[in-house]
Image (cartoon, rainbow, N blue to C red; front, side):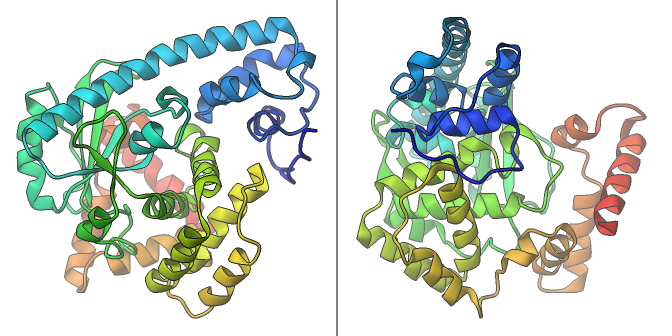
Length: 378
């Protein structure tokens, strides 16, 4: 029997239908006029391929119209070819880095696709995230990637990641994001060291010499990534904190965990003072997909979060989050204002894409200022 749908009243009809497909829940009525919207929503949520795969064994598949199933299959075929192109480029990068004996760990979907999902193409990846032992390795990384046609992207000089891109691929460009901290947040940047993560890293199947985060650290990475995006309510689609692809990562990890791994999650949450953020992310995944969490886990996380530094109210509120980021950016006020200057006046390609070309740099600054004022007044 299909499972009961979760309480997700704020979601759109297509989102609710996709969640029901993914968790093998009772399917809401699907009207023919919503077919195109549903496929586009599945793409924007990063789960079209996963939904098509899960639908193959759904107990209510026979009740779905043949026309929709045909369109979904055709769309999935197109997207599979795109993901195969992304995986082929990823393999080239892996091979170049390993041949150069360059130290790195693979983060997020670039690693999870190879061991957590039944097929690597089911986890949509739009870029490749890697973790370096430190910023001092960037010059060597740039040298290796340049041989493959990648060039560095202008970014915040005080950021804790750097991007490299080259033209091509299904999304117009291939991108490698190099991090030297697990979390792209000033408040969380010191919590996990490279060597700590490397000690529990696991070899990625079919990728000789390439390692990704171990399962427990991968869960922290996924939950922390969600927490960092909670205050950015204007972001939609693949990069939104609530995007189904991120939540399914957490759900799939939870499905694979042993009692010992859950105990490690509880212990590490207390040690890193991340209990509140972990509890929120895991509770959300459970609400959406019925994730199999230990009965007392959420209660234990809430209990130990009471005296911790990193609280949900900071990460879910834009003004509080930005203020804490400012304070954590440097130990002294001069460094903090230097970080603020680099952040405010950054005009990177991602900023240009988000705020448009109208009016040039001045126009983008004005639109960013207006957006920031709206958030401050909320």
